[in-house]
Length: 333
Image (cartoon, rainbow, N blue to C red; front, side, top):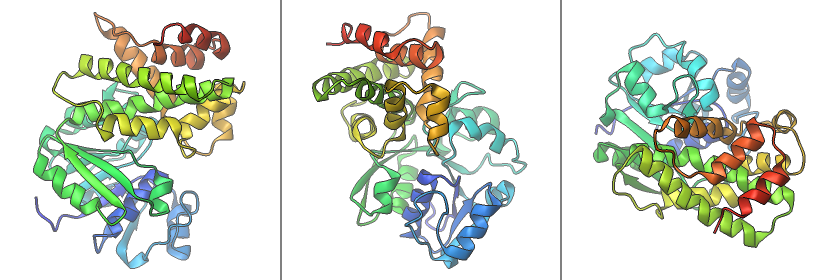
């Protein structure tokens, strides 16, 4: 893969900001698309994102900023999307540029609600991007720890492993260690599912369950994730690797996890609407719960998903979290 390729990040949230920071460690120029004119103007003036990871200061001569998605799509050879899945469709609708030959990297932690497809599958179906040009970024890695330059790990997944290695090299630094694999679909499902299990962990905490139950919940979650992914995409994978289990654990336990925080509010008695209003960031797991539930319902042979089903009942059927989790405790081992 050509080392002179131009990279651009699409999105202006905490994860997008962290990825731009990583790229700036290795590249002389990084493209950055953001919808907000205010965010762009603030960055140009103050050298940091006004809303997310504001402690991260950028050298503005390294950044090519734009509020025009087509300008940035034209510029970039490698397009890294870090826009919440619920907003992806409306952003992509603005695209007029042919991106079929671009390398598309998904740092989106969810399914496209409009198509019910993984982000990579969506680009293949609607934008004619070949499978070899689709990559996924997975953790375990929190944007907040990237901002603090704490040692973090990424997994880059692509059917063309040479492309995965090139992208990994561009993101690597003293504080970012990278691995690669070719399980694009499995990794993308894992990235989506971990947020649902983090909501479950948050609900449990909000309800007053302790560490003993949390450990049982997490061990059941990884087995449930394994069943779900195997049903969707059968291939040889080690579910205990960092991209799957490691990412699940950090999202389920970390104080930085917005999905755990969201679940914690629900467990403490907040309504879904009030919990969302309280948070300034999108909890991807809320949308992922519905997507995962619908995908399983469509299957002729449904997979046993007691944890996902419990979260779905609480978030979408307004069932009492205390009663739902009481039942759940009897289904876990």
